[in-house]
Length: 313
Image (cartoon, rainbow, N blue to C red):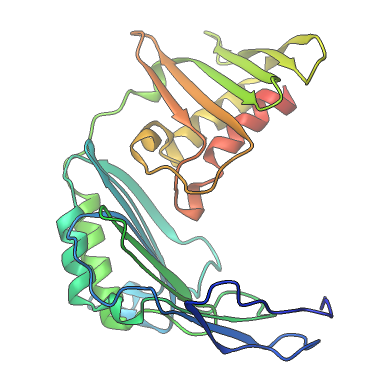
């Protein structure tokens, strides 16, 4: 559907509009260039690396056709405790089918290796360039977002054309497979998880708290308290079937939730503060905020559990 009367406002004097749809025009392409985007990076300390792109005809990463990839999504967030690494690739364009994906929380701080890759591939040359063709059925290109500890960023995107070359994709594939095979940070075993605590604090003084206790027979019990604005506190207690408990455990593992505290905080502010607390048999507790920067493929991991504990049960 096209909305007419679209008015373009150049609110940032450093953003140059290279191309834009005409007034009342459906579709078209909006292309911009941020003149403030640096063409040289003064830091070597990468704190976030996020590259996602379709690859057109694809790229061979090995000797056989089975290793030809047409889509990559590489995410890494180095921190003081290690590096959260996520990588997926597919023989299909973009996200058709199920891309092969892996995540790991490795001991190595991969910041310098990510900087070396970024420098060697010359990603900074396209910094600040963004192009969006409206009305496409899917993203045929991709985006690059790389952030440094000194605040400098590399950011460019195009939803019509691949944003990285086949050689870039090969280099990313090699590095990320090596990183994923690195020594892992030891996280608590999901099998010994006994409780999950959810808490939301709202700006109006309201809150929602829930505690899901795992029972010996594989089921669970969810106890919830909620207060909205100036109302009283509502309480409930509901059983959770074994299938749902199993799905929650699988969600934690698949989305790497126990490693989320090491991820960078999102620059976007949320209306309420939300946390999940994972409690284990030995008393270990890992608290995960919902405001983390995550790869798209796993970013619903927090919400999936919140939904079960606050809405469905």
